[in-house]
Length: 452
Image 1 (cartoon, rainbow, N blue to C red):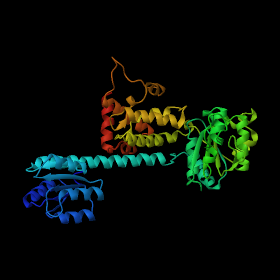
Image 2: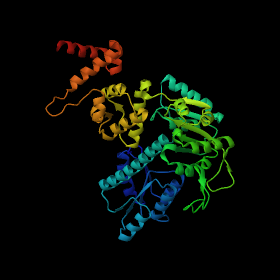
Image 3: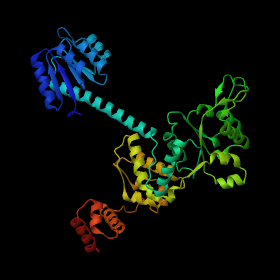
Image 4: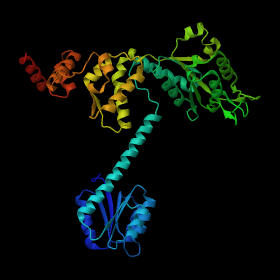
């Protein structure tokens, strides 16, 4: 911060001004020093400084006016007041106007340097927090499907192709594969992206409550209905309606939904006139649809209405090539959210992640990485940061009391041999992957042989 920090110093005493300019410049700040308060006012009107360091008592334009102007024009800037006419009231007034600190003359240069550093640190932290917040908001708002799997890439291509067509879409796949992510992806790439996106989990409500949530009601439609309520279908008009676990709908609700899709209108509970709606329906389920239709769980006519295009998302166990990519993506996401400097995942952790079958799919992998980020105090996720269950699933148990921990040299030896094995024994490629030169790798390998 000291290299980039800019300071405007204002003092009508030449000696004090020179001393402050010298000390602040030596500390690495970019300093503009002026003896005229009128000139300082002009500068503030033209440009922003990180910090205003100003005397209070000056002719024509005093420090309080500079403070007020600086806070109005540049609310992110900090102001430190200096005066030889200190009183409790002037200090209170300055702080009320937003001054960071109040220093009395004669001052010690070390004291000023310390206060300036604290003000600059406050600015740095505020900017850093703002940047982190923007990054988190970007991650939350952005619909990003991370994959390098050929099948998933084909699905994404199909999703982009059908997104602008406004046809109804059925998304199928196991829990945790990312069905809602695909639904939001379709909405974002459609012509409806400026309209609402409304998601409903059909399995989370009873039959009567789901009807009220979806269709709404008129005032006095039932006991306790003190006002009119729009349903979620009506709320989604002009945008997309995502119905998750659509097979959990009762047969009666399925009939009502079919009418909405066919007639493009919704009838609130207690109403006599339907309301026109303009929605695109994206439905999802983790059930076998053929079996659901055959058993009567899902009406065949509704199935045909919803199933204009089907996107079948494969489980994570069938696209293990995505695991390192997803793990790194979640690592970056949670490192930002948790304000940590994590940037890597240990090789033995990645090996366990690759071997695991993920009954909870991508959602489970995300939770594993989130936990690792939460408990890690270093710059990467280590084996110890995985849950005991996860380590056992991976076939690895950490030493307990009385057992010997492997040495760093043993760990390095194991890792180097694993890299060599993965690269078919190619020492040049292994050295590049390890970030060392080939001669260093050769010496390590020779040392392992000599030790046998």
